[in-house]
Amino acid sequence: MHPVEKFCRRLDAINMAVGKAISWVSLLMVLVVTVDVIFRYIFNITFVFVQELEWHLFGVLFLIGAGYTLLYDAHVRVDVFYQNFPPKLKALVNFLGSLVFLFPGCFLVIDTSLHYTWNSWLIREGSPDPGGLPARYLLKACIPIGFSLIALQGIPLMLRNLLILLGHDVEETISKRGAH
Image 1 (cartoon, one colour):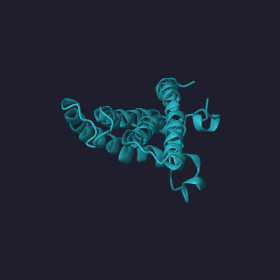
Image 2 (cartoon, rainbow, N blue to C red):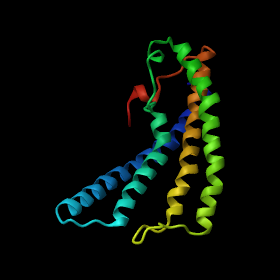
Image 3 (cartoon, one colour):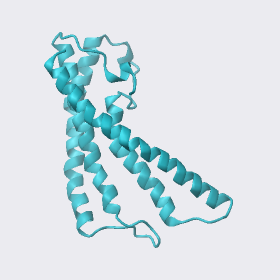
Image 4 (cartoon, one colour):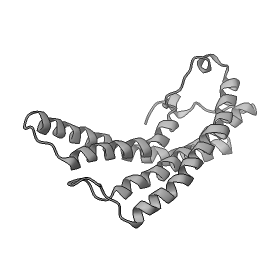
């Protein structure tokens, strides 16, 4: 195994562990939504904090799980042409896409969200709605963390595609090996 591939697997392991841990949030979200629907439609009762909890859980799941999704190459993409490209052209598209779009986009969001998140922490921001959730700053902290995890996963994506472009034999990607 190429030393770069070993390095890539170490970085993959980070998002794999994060993804497995954050997957439990989806179960919690299903339970919260189910209880909310039962209370709303059977008992005609609704709570602001439960509705906020639903979108907070979704936000955490989406943001923190995005790097894991990139690990398995499961992001939405328009594959009209890409799916028929030869492997080296796919590698070139992925490599350039990482350099031109993925990393600059992640760094832009991280840079702009750090100040936003820091201000929220300083004032210990909570919900503006009566009966809403406290600690909204925790949700906002997921923005730079989530995009950092995406950027971190972009490193193995870019390096593996560079190896392909340089003519090295790269083992199957995790998406083709299947989820663990």
